[in-house]
Image (spheres, rainbow, N blue to C red):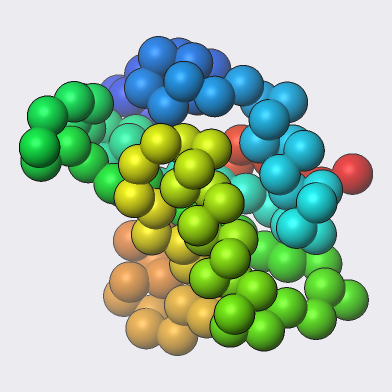
Length: 117
């Protein structure tokens, strides 16, 4: 299923993730994220909202070049995001996508939620 066949981004944030665009923007500003995007099952009809096997959230971020975050900072960011979204988050940095096949699959289907100011 292509991204074009999925529900719109506002419905994803509101209905599936129970989070506002403003909350995402505040999170991004605090963590110096210049781009925040969703990819994977959260954009498709096979996303599981409830139950023991509910889906995780795949997030792709780009940090401000002056952020200076280390691995521990990114882990803290991921935990904070899991609290905000109330579910497990797989957090990927766009610049860390080295495998060209994986990079292409993610970049052709991702949807940008926040683009820095």
